[in-house]
Image (cartoon, rainbow, N blue to C red; front, side, top):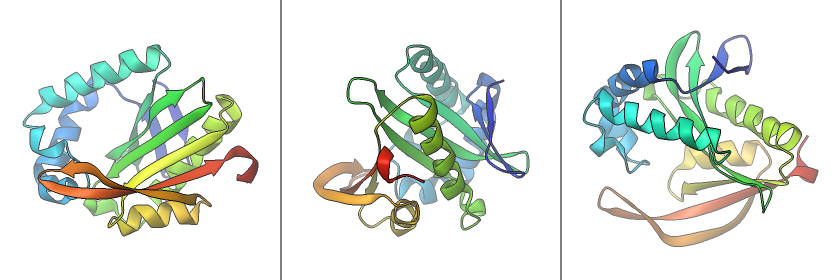
Length: 179
């Protein structure tokens, strides 16, 4: 299993088929919470949804298009973080993530994003990391700001989140400004 140690309590692991049931369990219990900021939870009706997602993610990883990791905290599956896209021509990655509500506020996402930034700049030789979040998603915006991202702009009417149209704040971090 491909893993990255973030710290003594947090580990990122390349998604595997065996994680599908755990993903579904979190979403089944927290569908309303996750649906505030993610479009897909209403469609995740069973573990097969995640099995399909994992299969596609592994194909995209093999093709160098993305990197999707499971987030473990104290050996418990608690969320997901990824390079949603890896653009080799532009030398840019886009990071996305979600975390179980039960594990919010522990620094898990901030530390995990920091780890992926290091991977992007040092291992993948990227020049830019980008994160887009709903303008109203203050916790995610604070992650970006804590890590030194600059607000590059707001895209209006960027996403339909389960019937609610939201604007996206787009944050960017250039390699020369990291660390």
